[in-house]
Length: 189
Ligand code: G4P
Image (cartoon, rainbow, N blue to C red; front, side, top):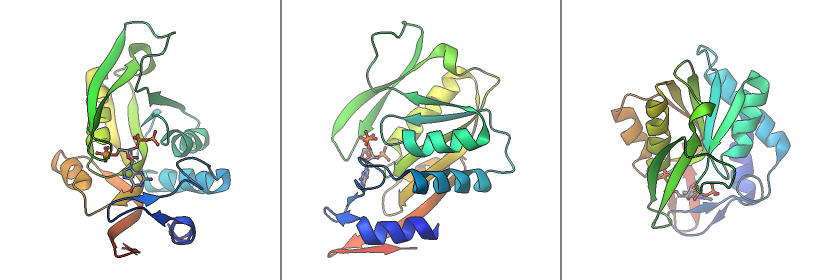
């Protein structure tokens, strides 16, 4: 998606050979016009699928997921990393390990929000090692719902995420694909 690539080139900040900071339009400050375009692009990529729900993970997945859900006219659910005060014990729960942050989080979704009739599209901001994506797939499996595939805003192809998801037979569509980050440069496909 050219508009996203242009924005990454303009505003992305290289933290090291693994991490691109995109805090000015996706991860901290959010550009709604770009998110709207991203939502439309996901809908276009998955136009052959019947989607009844969008699932993402807090916090940075919420913006692209919400714009996609809005234009599809379906609900968006975000998995929480911590159980909120108002949640009952009737939840789907799984663990996710972050290689980037070297920490394990819980992922929690109330059981009444996804059911076995749902056709779920997962949206997330980054695909790195695929751990978050696999955990969301696990929650969809617990719900007995149908997983349509993964819509990813930025994929880092030099990490193992896509390989893991394709190995499981899942469809993955990403809007920007980073080939490598080397010596202060980002290389895209
Ligand atoms: P994985 O799920 O694919 O295995 O990825 P990983 O554990 O490595 O990622 C952990 C967190 O770091 C995720 O955010 C992910 O979006 C983010 N992340 C991974 N690579 C990059 C990168 O190159 N740039 C940026 N900006 N973020 C990256 P999170 O912990 O869920 O945070 P948030 O959603 O609350 O913002």
